[in-house]
Length: 111
Length: 112
Image (cartoon, rainbow over all chains, first blue to last red; front, side):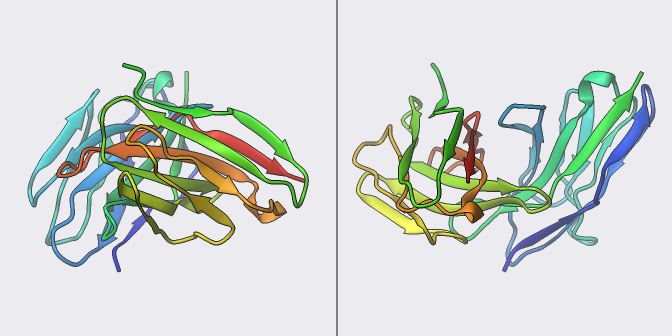
């Protein structure tokens, strides 16, 4: 079945540092790929998505490109802020109409 | 437009007690689902529904019941709570034919 593997955290960065969170997937067919973000004490919010190979999703300075050849969807941001501190989840569509999530990566950004 | 709402936000139960977690959405979404979030496990699907009167099991359905009598509501019932059900529970919804899911704020449940 479909599955997602994302880099384990926690990740601690200084403000304005470059961020990469790795995500690879295993899937049959061509699922949509997502990054969701969970701020402390809150639910999950969609950060960005891509629906087909070579699509780039972007939002709030974050980007991720759907790479079919490497089955990857790595999240990047050029300059993180303290307000980006959160847990980030990579996900893809499952066969039950659901989302299949990675385990999450906690990001802490220090001023 | 309130989106997806969940009540309560926090709940403490004793082993063997029963309770219902409420979920409602006002976006006329046909698809609704319940997930549980455990440390280091990501989110796992418990049950889902593609419309009123239709429900099905997800990855971890044991110990939980659901029903869908209206489009708006999708309650999750714990019949006899166990400590293994201590978790954060999220409800989500989406329009059939689209892939973006909208999540509620979650219910943090502790079973003693």
